[in-house]
Length: 201
Image (cartoon, rainbow, N blue to C red; front, side):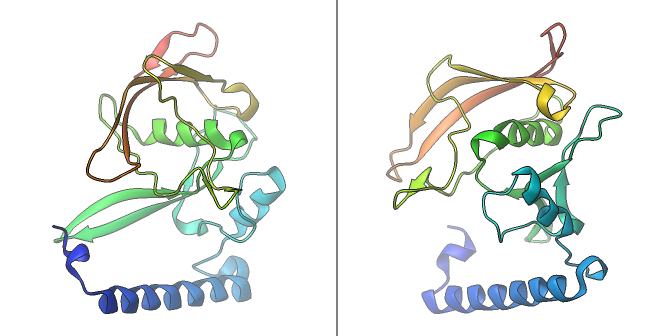
């Protein structure tokens, strides 16, 4: 069992309080010092004008935000509400990305981000830790196909991405040990926008 699951409720609460305090200090510094702050969030705040943030008060720090790769010469925004995170586990740094639950208009941004983080032939695990809706409020748009052989295609055109995308469901299974937990295997292909041929899989 992972160490963090073996901790007492009191220890977990204390750690959460310390993380919240540190985060509040960083946000305060960003609001007071703006562009000169190590914790500035200027790009995310500006992106609110182009409808890329689910929430009006949750932005990635500029220094660790994920930047979307655009087609050469594009003047569109490279913004997605997502951050690179490094976690040191047993002296072994692990790289992760934390992202907001996509909205309908940002699904293609999410999958473009996944594609650009994927080395040729490697696998990516996506852990979704929020429901699609909670208490009648939308928390995340359903951004994946979950029926065998179901295919979703996303165009690169509106946002000047280099490739169109095709996502295919290879299988979906409910995990028995945690109720409501599913394992979905997907195939993500990058397509040439003109020929629709696969250029990266």
